[in-house]
Image (tube, rainbow, N blue to C red; front, side):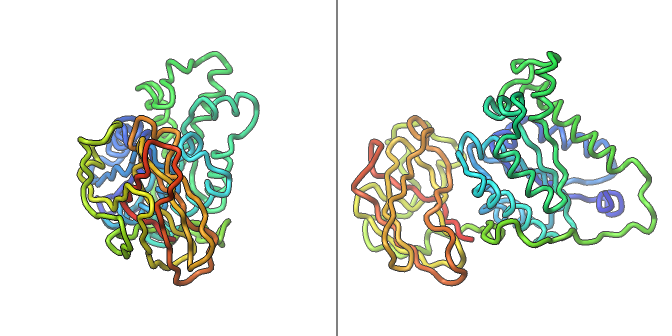
Length: 356
């Protein structure tokens, strides 16, 4: 608020999955802010990418948000994606969301953040049965640690449905209808009213947000993408735009012009040097997505499946972790396409490597 009122400028970013990417709650919140600060020139960043989870969010925060300049306010939502796309354990929910929040605090110490919990059928059922869903509880733990404001839309929807004042159809389902997006924007507007009702004191000044010790020291706070061109090819890989017209399965336009590091035959092999405690690959995994044999620093290989339940009919964006819980420092990843597969092929199409 201080920045918006005194400088007449503001940068507001929205990070999340399809609920953020769609023309839903995000443009409504932009309109709320513009109405509250009519003299302020806002830059709004839509960093929503359908199907992506908090791990992907942590790895792409730098390139998709922070690379555009300092951020004053960040909205982030991944509760639904971590549940139905990532199928994450609690630890991975924390590593991804804490990575986002901690990276934001380190890069933009004065920035505020709002974490919103949207709802799918599983999350709804948990709340109606009196349980806090795993992804919501994990993200709430991060929010409490860092003093981040939360909008528990999922709990509100569950309570209203239990009371008989709202139906799932009226709300609109996983991707909310206009009514559901209006409800979310209203809750965010009410948060602004509670926070900003009093006049701004003349002595008010920016002060850095708290940066407590991490919940998980291995959270993805140093998450970043690594150019696939940095990989050293042993055999069987090419870097370029795939011939999508020849490949079965639906494609999303945002990915079809991107160069990717691609292999389609078992035995294709590469290595990648990186710094940090974790490494992964941000891929599109389609009907022909294969498996890989993965080794770190010459250690024993483990089998990693790139195929996802949603890959059957779609070249599906996901971040596949290839090595975690590593000692800080320099490491070498060895990635070899496996002979075994659970799909129609052996393909690996890597948009970016991810390191933390």
